[in-house]
Image (cartoon, rainbow, N blue to C red; front, side, top):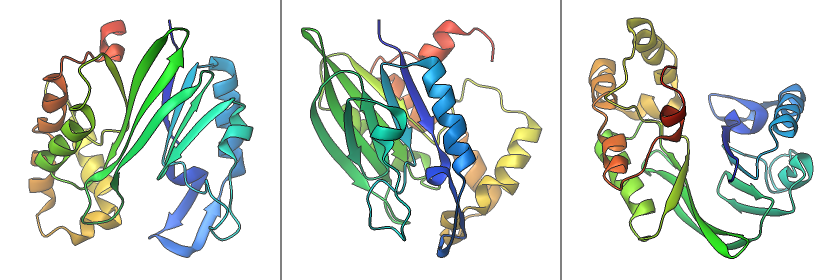
Length: 220
């Protein structure tokens, strides 16, 4: 068995103020808390989403994720960081960031004993419409006919889940304050209804993938 954790660390444990690079605030206490959690859980594979500052060229903010989380193997693509106790034998980046892009992804293979494990990490753009997210996710998954593990932050919702009125209000008031949404001419209600259509998750299910969290937890 493998223990795998996917963890969105939200802008590399920092705050962007309206994506103004001059107003970056790094929060070391968040990094410290994450390290304590990962040490306790001790996953074989750790996937970090929004792992910014992974190169030394950004305004003197640099995080050596391999050193901080103490893993022998690492692969970095965009802001996706894959950490593993086992050798990473293959890796390829997909997608790009930007208001006109649909997201970023990573395909990788990890050698565990005599077996290779196919890992797919995805982070679709939060404001992409469901049809765009679905096509992006299918582009990450389509190549492999062998079993694969899909991780990441889908920025998508399952139509089978029940989202409360409070949740809907928070999504409209907080998530849609994201800068990407300000470029979208649609109304907030139109965006919300499209997001709740579940087309992206439905596209993933067609590959025969199981939601392991739901398989283990009947309620959440």
